[in-house]
Length: 250
Image 1 (tube, rainbow, N blue to C red):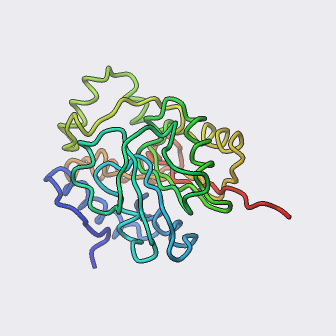
Image 2: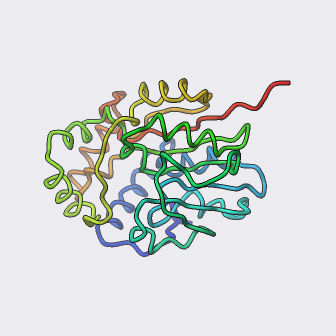
């Protein structure tokens, strides 16, 4: 079976990136893609017949697709109806803001959020809402770009229009897929502080490398793979995390 299962049709640039992920995994078996890491972390913790919220659901959710047999109900929320048009992995999609979720207290076993925290402008409100809708003992699972990586540092030097054009050219993501970035909740220290403020326990919070963002051919792949093996945060492009809402003590 190919490393990383495909759940949707991929464009040529997305497929190029996926093939480099598979190559890097063969060459470095101890490494895992951030989505695979998060899937495994969630699988270890997810109760049977779980209720899951996909916060910022967009086009789909690899973790939910992979673990659907353990999930009784999966609900998504996003601010933009258009970006959810291809999403077929959820039972229901609602539209609204993460700062004010339209759900009752203690509605979900898990909140999964993929490539969303970097866009949040009021992260303390968002984390408080995640905690509110989680059942006691439930957890938040997320992947976000690492603010300390050199790629994010480079992007922050550009204006939004130039950054969006580069993302579309090199990664095949169109303007309607790209939201403004805030970078207020995507460093280890920021997330740790937000977790502490919201009363969450950090079970996993780690940086992870992915050389495929700068792999456009064989030569660039070799250079990117070398940098990804260096033990520095600037070459760890993602953060993977699990934050737990405590159970009540009696």
